[in-house]
Image (cartoon, rainbow, N blue to C red; front, top):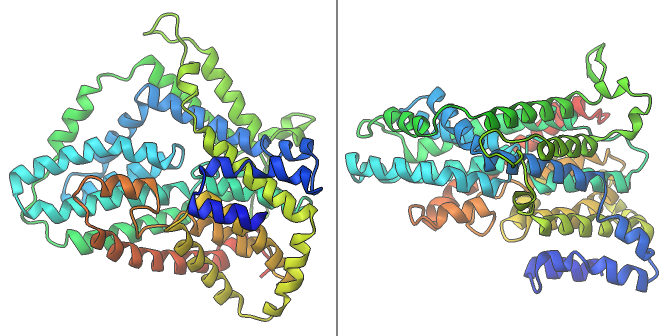
Length: 454
């Protein structure tokens, strides 16, 4: 059945979320798990973490706060051509840490296209290569930003739950713990992407004018910050802080106690609890400028991608089925022949394999198929499971070569400014850099953050 789901996810013979419901139908009929237990995999704390984070993202979009943040970042960075690309990439990456990469890219595109049109009017053909660098920068930054936080992209959340299912006695991967590894990786990879794109497409700036006045005008049109924007910004900051500081943070011998210890039942509180609590506050607080409305309404909330929710559940059910059926143990036994292989090489191969797979398939579906297998492989070769599972998860978000790889790639390709050759050339180099960087960081920094014992 796992093979059937893998084939249907890759070929999209039926809609991807529909394939994710196969365990509900077949696990009970095959005697693997009861219907009640399977159904429980589709709604758990990780699902509610996603829902809470997505509702906050929708609130930011509803009141246009994300556009204000993006323009402010671009104005702070500067308005020379190289700095424009850097500003767009930083703004896109930051928003993509909290908002879906598709929504972030769609929001940034009108601003980017306005810059491109104006530069073409003033600089003519010289602006052509700049436009390629800018658009690819937005697409790549949307993917790179998502790896920084646990809610930034679906594969991260899928990993969190599959790790819990595969190793129920292992410590939870907290929001702060993931971010302490994912954020440095995201920052370094973003800088590499910017340097690569500016070298390839904006090597000379002499014929390109500055566009600071245009950005100032766009920001001025937003008007003063409304009450609703301020409240959503406060709640957004509160949500991020509560996620980061929920559990103890250890810095050397110093331990910063997490706020959850204020409750006698701290073990009952997780990141999903926090996300839904802040989401409920959004539904409760009234709007000043729209009498009778609140900061969040249900008409906006239903825009949440419920297909992804079902896809998550299908992957979690599949991981649970791997364990309950004994397939994980069988795979682990079969893979013992790899014991003794150089671990660094194995991690690098895993990174490259996931990057190639996600160029053509759904990164979430691919992650959910591969992670249980990597968990079994780690047991077989006697290495820490996170040493393989985290690089695989991160690599699934590094699909930079093809338009079909991610929605951001498809969106910028659809403008007609970027040709397939441009994306492939830049994407191959960035994929290679990402694979090497992830491999190095998991050994140099990941061993500290996740206590890998290597």
